[in-house]
Length: 192
Image 1 (spheres, rainbow, N blue to C red):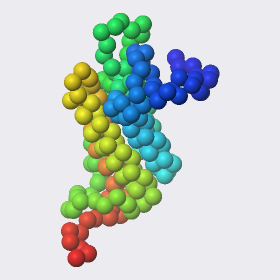
Image 2 (cartoon, helix red, strand yellow; image 1 turned 180 degrees about the vertical axis):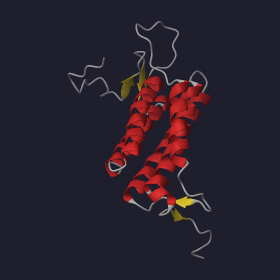
Image 3 (cartoon, one colour; image 1 turned 120 degrees about the vertical axis):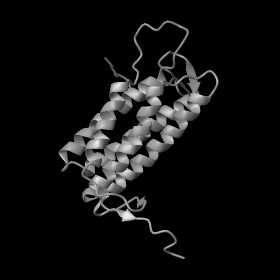
Image 4 (cartoon, rainbow, N blue to C red; image 1 turned 120 degrees about the horizontal axis):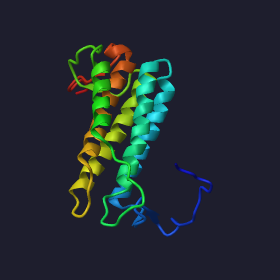
């Protein structure tokens, strides 16, 4: 259980933050940047939820993803360590990836087929979901970079999950555009 009695601790005043292992890292460290960007994606999804309240099914899916993104942040904030921790670190697991894949398939089944790339926009909900999608893609790039960095570990399920989040948000944005009928389509070279 998490208990937050005091919000400021002053321990970060030197430009460092604590990982779940207790190790201190600079606030611009790649691992901190990765889970900070996951948090940013989560906040963008929260804004999207404000626009999706009328679609109870989509709203519930988005809220599950928000919870999973906190799990993902906890996973990234607690790298595997040689030292024995006094708790079991939270990790993204395959069933979370499978669940979001099932949600993508469910939403995509009712969408009109794409005949062009989609521009972000249409409805306010769709535009907000596209913003969240681009933030999730940035988080994914940082997580993959972290996984490639010598001495750093990232679980494969974490990479798969964040990849699916942006896929989900793309499909959700199309659903928010009345099943794709209000999608704004890219017209190559239209403004030449």
